[in-house]
Image (cartoon, rainbow, N blue to C red):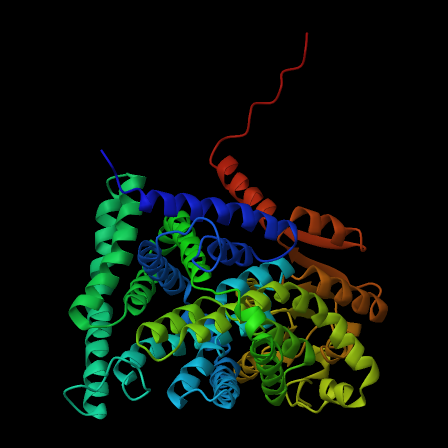
Length: 570
């Protein structure tokens, strides 16, 4: 009996080539996404040999979009966003606007319709959160203030893109698409109806979903079955996405995003993220493979100048705009370079937008090929851009008086107020970082009445601390001038509560040069980093897992009586 094995062959070819090329990309120190996209190119219709089923690949990609957006919702933290809102929100909005204008002007110069040019510009304006997180983890910057600013910036971009996914279908007719989004009514009426449907769905999720979804997972968790729990999480993601599209007319992506966001507030969020991760990763791979299948490599030969122009907007235009915006907010050069490097690429949201634009008839196949080409090149170059960020900053500071003035310009939060008690600044603790660890340390010092000065990169955080009566200065503690402002020369102890070993070494050098007898306490995430930092001098290094194990061991042993003393021999 003849059987249609197109699903099996598509999965086998997609996963097999993605594994091979993803492994090769990793060995070449490239992001694995480059390998996944190239796997799609090889099994797509634009290259000779085996061609996977495009219809099935599109449906599998849709599942990948749902699970990707579900994962984004699971990791969306409103608290983290609020901590950097003053720079992330306006910065992301303005940067997306500037990038959209650049892309639109470029497309209009090619005589594209204005609607296609607008959507094309939007696809170039949003960077990949997946690529950013992997890059920050590789550099050890994920928990740093620069890392939090970059992640918050991209979260705002993600939220803006989700809104675009909602508004694009009803606007398709106005933008020149093949599907008239305003059929049977005015544009204002269509938009109002769309927003009402989205509002109804959001209200239902916030009112009912926040209680019903955790309750359902609790009932499943009580069975003790890991398989059922994983199934419940995946069913929630795909089922809510499908229900949102069927009942409210919103996209699969928005439904899955809100499913993840609602679930994040429950006590099962961590377990849900962990249990669904393998399946999310697998279908995310299929999503990137399917995007690669739609890419026509001939665009590199037929339109090389257009590809270069797209790459220039992604890498140079977006990065320069972001860096200037960060400097306008009076943040240091290292923050500007980190954010600029973070935005010098495009990824999954660009693919989702360009795919939606193609299905609505707003964008052409050429536009999709240009976007995928720009993504491939920018993602491949992103690790190199991150690696060059710090040398470039040092080179600019060494040669540019303007850059040095920007680093040392007057900032009311960069120095302690004159009203600070000078007696307070002798024998104090200098606490670098006011994250989750730093806050706990600060509360303990307050309770004991031990004087301390907080050094924090976020000016918003410093302003809040000063409002609460604490001594705090803003700036990068790796800069000697910042530690001087914290009066480290007269401090009894330097506590480095940020897990950044490279910056920690520079802080150690400055502190020891200004105050040779100072005691240093710092944290790290790995045993290797702990060993290296302890070699730098007389420092007390806390390694997270070791301290957790010690604390648990002390608690366990404290519950049992000590062993009887060994009896002396005869």
